Length: 626
Image 1 (cartoon, helix red, strand yellow):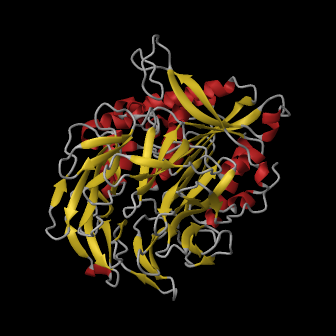
Image 2 (cartoon, rainbow, N blue to C red; image 1 turned 120 degrees about the vertical axis):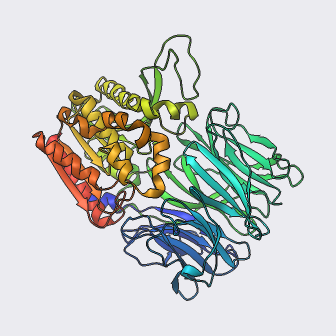
Image 3 (spheres, rainbow, N blue to C red; image 1 turned 120 degrees about the horizontal axis):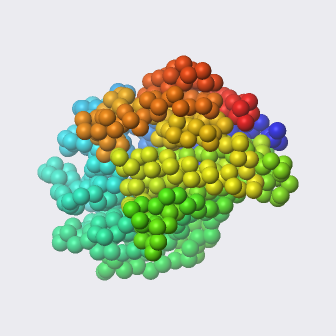
């Protein structure tokens, strides 16, 4: 057994979501000290922070006003994702519910530069679509002004520097978006990115003069995302930074100074570039020293007033998440938050190794991470992160090898990156190895790679899991007879599918909020999500027969490994009926199966007491069957 119980590991805290106050003398952030993420503020590095919200529910984000000592934060109820917006007076502590419409979702769109108004997108009018609203900081509920009737999945990317326009994004799928400018006086919508086929136009920010927009895109022949500048008058799109085979994740831009931070995702690791745009040439810039940050994963940039500093969060395999503040011109980084590790020594955390597993190829090609044709019929290169427990890594393990958990990400356009996971470290401490594959269909490796599991190619990604398991079975540190599949959301589907397609490989399976039946999932998921999900999985109208054929519920007789299914009763993405039906069918087969449903959770588990119960039960289940 390990050195510490699961409760200790789940009490390792994370500090993230930083936002600088208007004078740059205060920093807000989210931290889960009380068991759910709440708003905290701090004025000096590593001082004792002040807790500002005290809810049982998780706070989703917090954003300071640019002019006043107040901030907006978002919070849903029981994981239902119907977020409401609240204003917190940082001087008095008074909290006001600005939206007060609990049946609707509210998606934050930012403060106006004068701090008098906020913008958001909401599905108040029609649950299936998002409209654009503007609301005064003192207004409430239905006093918000509906400024644009939407017809799909709209989100906002911020106010123009003069507060007369909003930048609007519309998503048709995760790989196809459009950008618009909404004139708040005329309410006219100007389409910036007309195109054919799938093109990503995303992570947009206003240029300081308001005459252009910075964004990341794969327009043209690009396979990966690059940073570009779009001139609003000429509509010319100019490349600012090439992707160079890897995605530019996005840009954080201070629209008063032109200072920026952009990140590139290189095999899952973050590379940051800090710079300042030339005021006369929007595609020219100078760069500053790269900050020296721990962990390898960083994001969530917030500039202080004047843009001499910025805050961001960092994480790594062996580095729990904390907020650092970086000096723009020197690159010096200082940790501001002290998220504790529950008394567990940081040096006891294990680090992963980036590995590549060969799976089968595509049409005589070997699409590597960049889709490069090979000279032969070699297979597809599937990246993943393998972490061995200390005994196995040092060569002191049992000669039979360690049991291994194959943890499969959701999405499906997700990506496993080497960020901190207290659950992973707990199982490593108990002697389990951990493998996190990025099978075809994952993001981060180019559009071609991400499209290799679309619709009729869905099961090719499951075949990649088989290739990874066969690779693990040959690994000298792994016990080939003790391999478990674990995954959440779409990763839960991958677990169920792997158990039905390759039943002989598995000793156990753990499905967390997973899809068991694509037809019932698409029929019952939130109305606002259905069109986006059908773009990825296939439509009920055109692809029902295929969706039925690949649904694990219809192949359940092939499951042999013991199965544990966990779900939240309020899940708006993958309704709890997915869990109920797969448990019933597996039980009818006489296969050991366990179910755990949380009445106050949604798509995942956010409350500490529920996380402790869930992962204690998972640990007991794995100990029993592995």
